[in-house]
Length: 207
Image 1 (cartoon, rainbow, N blue to C red):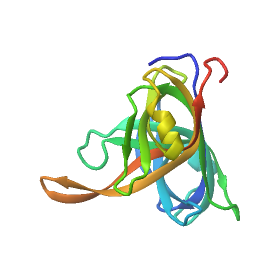
Image 2 (image 1 turned 90 degrees about the vertical axis):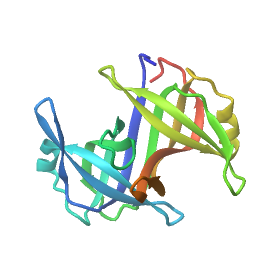
Image 3 (image 1 turned 45 degrees about the vertical axis):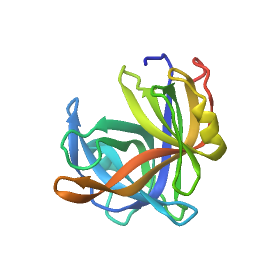
Image 4 (image 1 turned 90 degrees about the horizontal axis):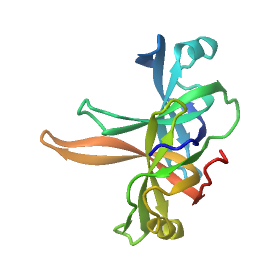
């Protein structure tokens, strides 16, 4: 699903819930990971892992309890360790600064291609929901595969989409806990997904 366009930008404001820990190295640069907790208007909270370079950490320190505003790109990778979620979603930070008194925020814009047939269904309480998988290209050829969910009228609209449709959406990056039954017994895990607020066809070449 290669295209010559993409849009991937997100902004999170919240509280650091841990100290940065080494994540990986890429092209000679070390990267670190820490969790950021951001609250919704409903009072529920999402906890998202942020990835940032050592160079950025040297200019903006991060400690547990810090109020931070981060801007960057949503990233996905497959977890092959066998522990935790199979698909891991993070925010690759491009800009980081203290948030001061700024309220929590969680918003993103994505443009990409639908790469899996929509899964339309109803929750046990009867709410309409539709699962989508969006492929968003990076500048250097790879793609991020991002699970998205739509509710209500947007779920109905999403159910009519086809694989290969170019889409642009606005939403938030959310986390949810669930129990996974394994051979070692039940385990608590966390899934990450994009909750869609607006969704429309995208026009390649505009972004």
